Image (cartoon, rainbow, N blue to C red; front, top):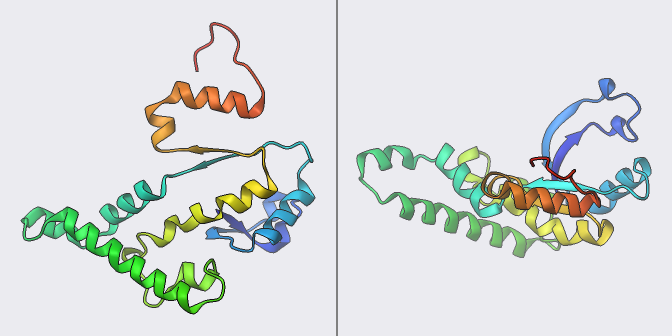
Length: 177
């Protein structure tokens, strides 16, 4: 799962001011994270995760960091084709990495497969969190997942209803979402 990684001394959290936030990270060791979370959460806790669609995430990352920006302006190369080439190249590298590892969700594979050391070369890899969702649901079956970018901006009323359903609450009559 993709989550904000905090220093190990923050579990269980006693004083968040003492916690060092290390930044976003993948957590393929779901069991360890689940153990930490369950040790500090009430058993009836409902979780709502807001995630970004992996495909939308890939294109946004590509558009932000891509060296094809210059090509787009000069029209020397087809921008969609450039995106396609980058994605295919990264998928091939990830596939090779996964084939060489016993565990395809190995942290080394996901974070730094071969020469994925620059932000430009991690278009698909940063969206691999989607592969972890079944594991999260196996431990937290009542967890709700909302697509933060497309759902929240394009269908706010529907997302609000899903949120209400997840939490088991109803908005007061006459109140806007």
